[in-house]
Length: 432
Ligand code: FAD
Image (cartoon, rainbow, N blue to C red):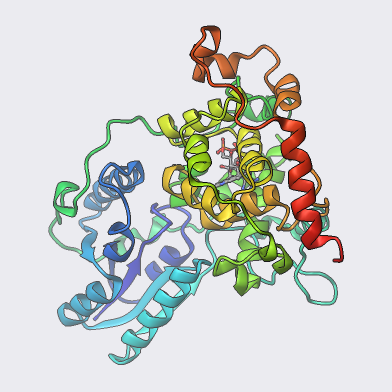
């Protein structure tokens, strides 16, 4: 008989809630991962994130080897993997961490049923966030829909307990002893190995010290670039929050935003299935001009700050937060294109893509999300540039032809576009 630890977006052996609980049991623990064909079939061969996951698994595999164990890595559907595992082993318990997305909720429910038929039990844990679901709610038990009061309650509830690490190391002898498994090759799964150096798995103290002053300026490296590590769990949110505590309240606040959007996803089913958080916004008659969308995607809008952002994204898989807000506002307000188009484009390109934060960010920009501000905030790209890229260092990096004569004229005039956006939104929302 064995227990199973099923890794998903928690690709690490330290401070991992489900792993800790698995290792504390009586039975040997078999580590498993599945390259889920339901997900992979939708991705292009050059998707950088698949290489990232692959490297993370190789690292875990090395560590497991030291303890005489090995991870079984499948290329299959989750159902396919568990059917194989249940044939191979007598499985008592499966341990895994919570995932708040709709696909994951459905998947986990199906696996739970499948396991039950063989008398195996699925156990799930909070691991990805500090507070989940209904842990931070209003006094009357209903969920917060605005960030600031949520963050206040979050901070009030925080004790050392919530930030302490799960001490798994001393239980590593519980890992099932077996000969090393090889991973299926990237090529065999239809992917290319991408030559890219991923962001470091750490944040320097110096960055945290200056974070509040530098984080808003895309021309300097003032943010951590840890998004991808948080997305795939190659670092622990508890360790990171502990590190931020006392060093940078502003950085900690960003981690609270992350919790906030995961909470929204967990609490509001219609957000998980792609509807506007404020459902009346789904009546907006988007223009959805495909040619204009293409110009936005390719960084050819004629607004240098917007184009710089899109080109940074297309080239590196990263875009600075300030510029994410500017490009998203431009798409939804200036071009009146459905925020879901932009959401999907970011989902394809961002290394740190995460449904909760991406959806939250897009709906914030479109005005349809969790925000106290009314819809008539329309970012002015020129003023944003004056404030946040005054010396044009960011723009010059990504739009070098600005110095010559090849650069396109603005595709819309700001004042006209602003008026059109307010009219269009206003017609639908005035009475709300
Ligand atoms: P840092 O500034 O160093 O922050 C540290 C961490 O805090 C981030 O890695 C992230 O996990 C979290 N964080 C920071 N800001 C936010 C925020 N506003 N909301 C939620 N979490 C936050 N973030 C994603 O992780 N994935 C996405 O797919 C994503 N899409 C976005 C789309 C739009 C339109 C907007 C406006 C924002 C989006 N964000 C997303 C939030 C934010 O832009 C990124 O988290 C941040 O830019 C990542 O860079 P960093 O790791 O250097 O962040």
